[in-house]
Image: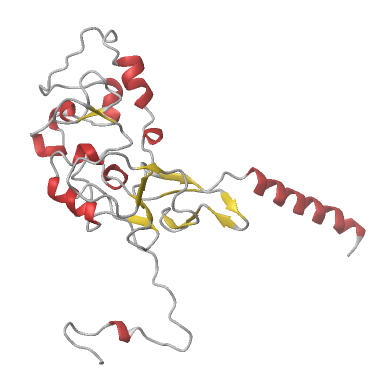
Length: 258
């Protein structure tokens, strides 16, 4: 290579390596876009905490399913057996940008002065409209509930149970179980929702809580009217070497090769 061409080549390699170093780390969502984002980072040699899909922006797999989790905490149903393994959840508070303002800046009881604590439906303005455009037509409950049925009336950075006791935003299943008892029981038994972690029934698992998948302020969102928008699935994996079709997976119901 001529000397005149060496310098530009070296500069190009230096620029590429520098650009890679300055590049923004990849971000993808775990369950619901805009509410479960995670930043990709290395947690071991050639092992990222998550693998992001370039197609959907969703997490494809987890290098450590328990990264950033904490114990689930108390559960609403008292007579169930919760000794089967260790249940972990990922905190939700850091995903809610306005949460520090709710109970410490705006709703302290003095600012705004005399803010109402009853559950009468009324219009909310200013920053609330970024959450719910029209609070007089709240999609959740189809008009049968309002904001203070779920949010604590005096501790606005908390949720509330039927006995007016505060619930942490990190444990939304305790709130949702108030009304959605049947779905909650299915979630607790593993029929509804998602878990990742160890296969053994006594193993450690991360449980995805309600608001990681469902938007509580717009539960009629999505084609299936279930509070979450579907995204295009990934392409099917390649067939094993030597196999030309996937006909072995297309048996009619009730038939078998055996």
